[in-house]
Image (cartoon, rainbow, N blue to C red; front, top):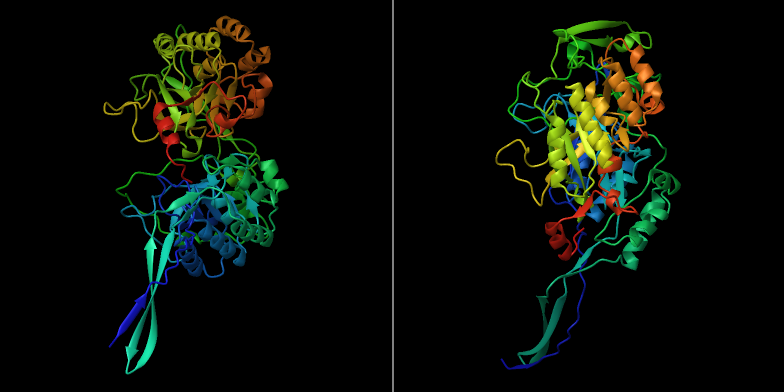
Length: 588
């Protein structure tokens, strides 16, 4: 056998498109869980939904198909909370959602019985739901590729508290060199040509600009879903290393949302009392309640605000005692106004007085107020994140001195104060309010949830001068003397989920002079004289009386995107570590 060979070599670079990456650090892959509302009073007919939380990956569409198959023809809405992920998978998810004619909303689900996957937490009740929870749009997000999934919903709602953000797509190319080699073989006197190919993989690289072909693909998908071109234009105009929030009004103009409603229209307990009831309501007889687990060996997930029924005109009265002020004859019990919570009595429900021991004093299990600097931990704010002062605990006579010393360590930095307190020492609250007023600080009522570790733990150390956390008005409360501390703020914010209670505390002349000094409407003091016991104030009442300066929540001071606004707030700071991260190659 004779062989003759020559090299017929051609070198070309063939780009191979890979699935775009997204900001999914710290997020597990999206999982789908059927949830039944645990709101008080909704049984036996409660709304149910599909919780979709986590990063979108290549296998996510298959997971959604599997759970929809178990539901048969039940069209449950999807409540999504996702940082984004695989664009191709997001398009598939959107088409699956549209094909099944499902509604979608941006929100988070807080599980109230047990956390899915925990030991002792059932996976199914045999009827499609074993997990109970409450849905809320506070702190929820739908970023990067998630809006493409969101576009698939028939009804699409985001609400005013949810965050939807878009940006350019990152595409990773894998250059390869193809080598062709042609050889000739002679077999039995005949010459044959044999061509072999060798592919050599080169070093990958990324581009941060959407190709024309992919732009056409997304444009066609959005038209298919009935969404305007403005979404794609905003994606193209936003660098891959950044993220652009689309405001609710703009989402409505772009037809990305179908109304100004929030997820309440899909998950609120009262919707199942309508006639006809929405298709996601399911009646379970009292003797066939979905199985509720016994004690489990797992920590509960993040808490969310309890829902208020549609027919309920006001929130239930708080369950905190009236605080005793120094100098008053303090009784050994506090009194609270309680309103019946049975939904059948609304709108005319009975009310009564309940006496219980005082609880908001140090030594009764309530810690003394402490102050720490907190930095927003939402990944979408990096490298420039908001910071604030967390003030949580009972106000004592030592609180003003602690606050003054703490502010001295900050120098000229003006950070807002996020307070959650059940009250305490009247004189301590007045003095702390004056310090806040002198430093011209803003104050919001909310609870700070620390990420990673609690500052109270000896091993918990601040990074770059701050602890990581998020501020939410859910579970935030400010009772009795705390409201006077709030009055010292320049901007005073109490969100719709936060609770604020106020009542007579004695020392009337002192309180009146203080409110005058803080430039608070005199109507507030007059209202205090008419409240016989500590009473929860509604948001419109607080605004009317001048205790709050606007209807905004704590997000106005600590939201992940405030550092992208102009002018930039004083409480934004780029830390040395985030500067280093910003210098690294951008990653979506």
